[in-house]
Image 1 (cartoon, helix red, strand yellow):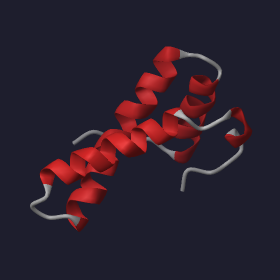
Image 2 (cartoon, one colour; image 1 turned 30 degrees about the horizontal axis):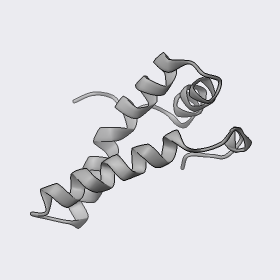
Image 3 (tube, rainbow, N blue to C red; image 1 turned 45 degrees about the vertical axis):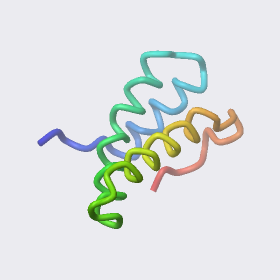
Image 4 (tube, rainbow, N blue to C red; image 1 turned 120 degrees about the vertical axis):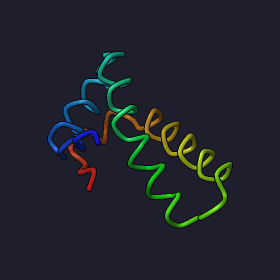
Length: 75
């Protein structure tokens, strides 16, 4: 099982992504996708399509966050 990223690691990736670093944004989305998938799957048992829709919507929302959010905590 992969190790989850820390708050500091996620923040660094988010700031990098907001600064235009494609690699940082990709790593952020890759780190968060399984966490979000597990979160939604526990709440929507048997609704796999809905889980995937929610994961995608959440990740799209992260991509849309503006630079004003640099100091906002992830947890």
